[in-house]
Image (cartoon, rainbow, N blue to C red; front, side, top):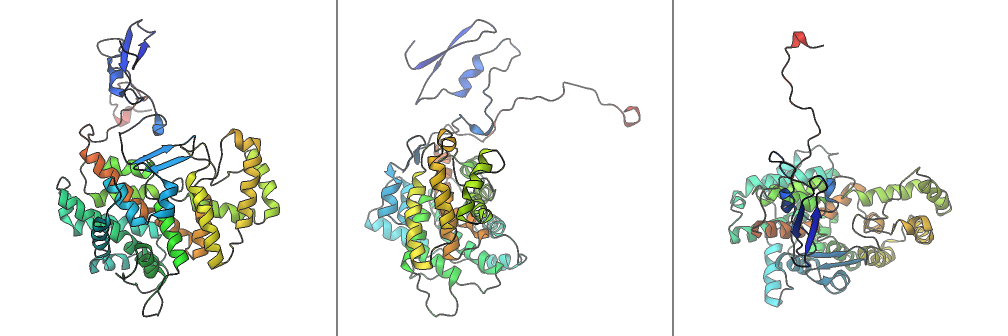
Length: 429
């Protein structure tokens, strides 16, 4: 016996078991040996929503929720937000190290020159009704790319995976921008290879009649930082969907479509939109105390506070708060900001929220920034999906290369009827 074991005594049988502990975890399959009889399949853990179950081992993102720490490949998110660009961070997330100059030039070139969409994809987007939700269009169009790039099915071919990585990261902003332009009845604005990744995205979204669109550098930088902050976030709902669908060896376009669909849900990618609606519902700074009182009485929800992982101030929220000030200097102060600041002040001083460790998360200020730049609320989740694509692909490739991974197939605890015999309709009561 070593100290790195867990001793389990089954009080049903009196038997004792030694289960190895590795990296602070036990292997769930080690529980199968704990049985009460020959017909028993063995003990399983019941953990709906993976509250305390690790589905994989990963080297990509580290989070310490109690201390408010987020790192990509070991690099603190604060340093990346200050010094890096989204494309450089995406390279880091995907390949494990920051690129040298030659690697960065090659990476940027390949992303830039894969941003054009096949004309039939444009026709595909044209087929949507004018009021179709941009996320619905994004999910469908990304899935449709699978039929255009059939070589993507060669998932164990290194060069094929590299090519699909270029295509997905490059084309997500184009699809998103085309979906937005379609929803407002504007002609599509094609990619401009002279612009940065986020500058080009703004060009495809906002270009009007000018011959050459030049993005505002403050907005371009703000969007770049927001993209860095959203590049990956460990095993969240959409990443779990990416890994789960990818475990069946589906091609990356289908897997990204599944991850995007998971992000579409209001509890995931729609959270910042919910914050904005909450602030508009409050209406004014003077009504914040009344709203907080209702929340404490169970009559409402405080959106943008608290997180499944963070039990401290979300490190991304601190960075976003600084970015918000820069955007407001260019676009004017968002009238909802005063409500948000007052809500944050009261919540951070109130024992009710402190005891529950409800601190502002990444969604609390992003909606205000997006609204000030000019994005409609329907686009908020889309702006989440674009940068998260690099993280999804990194997680997908890590899953493919992990020899311990098999097709995702959770166990269940059956609570239904026992065996019963079929009864003819005329004999049923």
